Image (tube, rainbow, N blue to C red; front, side):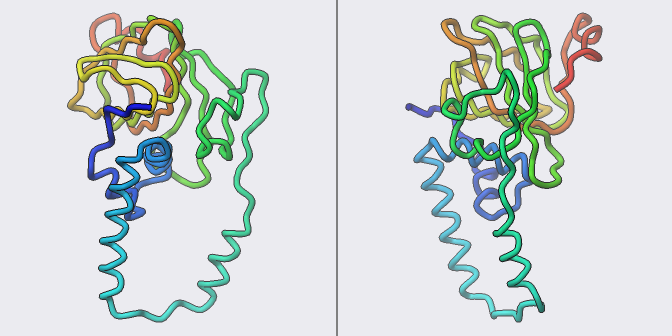
Length: 212
């Protein structure tokens, strides 16, 4: 797998430092699991952080802190939900196989989504987005951020072509119109904060019916 598009360095640094929210953390974890370049960068940042910690004067732990950590480790991870249209485990990265995945619902012609349940609170929401080959998305921007990991297939927009393993980052400054490649459906993991804002008169008409 050749990866051409990667997360911004600040997201990788936040992942290494543990400062991302649960949805952002999952998106970076899925990408890094298949990208050796980003894994090396994350390890380098972790190494720098470890060196900084060694220089800090130790502080005493709160009473019961160790027991609380061990209790969390003993908790069972969330299991994937069973549904008639579920994605086979073999089709998903190992990182996603322990998450509960909801049922498929329609988003737009040729496009459907399945929500992913996160283990804790998050300002972003995460879902699997499936688009049929050749689908032309409506031109849109965002009121927040959109982190997209391509799991299968491909799509293209003004920023280039994004195939399996690639990562696409969008925010309120990005105005794009993705088109799915021919030949096979495109399956992506998407972490989104804020809302989708569809451009144009027609976009304003259908925006109330498009929910991601």
